[in-house]
Image (cartoon, rainbow, N blue to C red; front, side):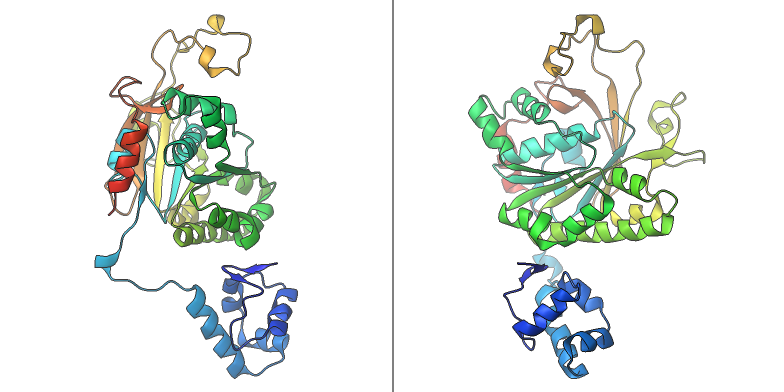
Length: 372
């Protein structure tokens, strides 16, 4: 049956009865938040009742869904580690639950790689569940399993299957489809709640926003605001981390989030896409940049015929160096972390691949102790 956010149609909140709740559903109200935003006149017309009853109903709905206040001394949140030690340290121990975290950068900088790394860590190490919204068709179970194997999180096919069974992949086909799934309790939110998910990944928000709103900036901004509010509501309600990826646009103005800040001359300046409104929606923004190298660090003559087999690549020198910059965060200062991408995903550049991988035991211990 349809859900009014966390309220099932069968859960009747006085002073309304079952017949009146059905009237609201038939009128197109999909959740309690829509009802709270509706005018008294609209609700009176649908329900056929007086204004006093409407206001009593509005008060009851608000008491059910609006967050309760707590003392600052009582505020606690858990953290989810990323597996990139420098980033976890810079964030104060990992990604804070109940927040919306964005990874933004050029194509090939590692945005999807870190999303799959986060999903693998959540499922294989913590034994938790993740919901993965793949709008670009870039999700690859094979790559996810390779990251987990390279880090020692799984050692056999049984563990691999168990890990993959904890990652719920969905493919929104359009901006409207994504918004409907986010606002409909039977879709993403119920999946996250039933699976007790610790992580919600959207890779990427920009793919749908740029494709479906060409030339309609006002409509796009309204859609982005609604999507961000839905993501943060789910993150807060289910105590999970919501992660999104974003594209970049050319930036011909001075300053901004440009590759010039790390690499100097030779990189075209870019800034995060989707505009100023979206930048205010995210809680934490991480900008990724990967250095371009010449010649390529992979000797293509040594590749096996199966070019999809990442493990068959023969490296003639170290992989390209990347730079991850925390450029917006409410609780930590801006900082810069150097990283490399190899079979184990994103790793700190300061150490070798083996020494910069956190063991499953240490990751679990770290997560158990990290509260702030």
